[in-house]
View 1 (cartoon, one colour):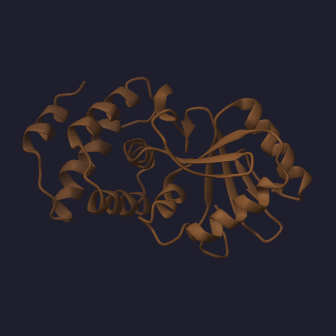
View 2 (tube, one colour):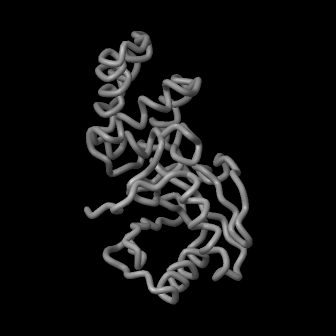
Length: 205
């Protein structure tokens, strides 16, 4: 998958949304996901791709139409490339980075700022971790490590929400992915291990 030639900082991202807002007449909520959210929250210096979720299908289709009008090229189901070679991945509803999160995931998001008609939010840290864990490549684990280092995450709350999210998921080995984090990765990172919680997760069926 092609990434942007430049790494995008929070300031660059805000400037892009500011210029995009000049073309948008409809009031819309845009949710930054994954590394994009972590960049805005200053948990990462920059992101390679701009991952955004649009609350409703109507707003999503409208934004796709605007992207076409201003010369973006659609290169896949979710990916749009700007003329400068910036990659935007657009999702909508509770389908986040290919994972079906709980329906309240957008309500639990954090309001960041507004650009004209655009209200920008970041996905909650719990749901950001869950969406990254579902994919689970090395970059995702690096991002999850950054979150745990910078924020107090309620691990039991995270595990409960992860289980609720994944109960009806098509993601395979979701129990093992969680153990990879709270047992293996936590061990590697010298984070405290909650042995009782690990034992409970191992009993999942």
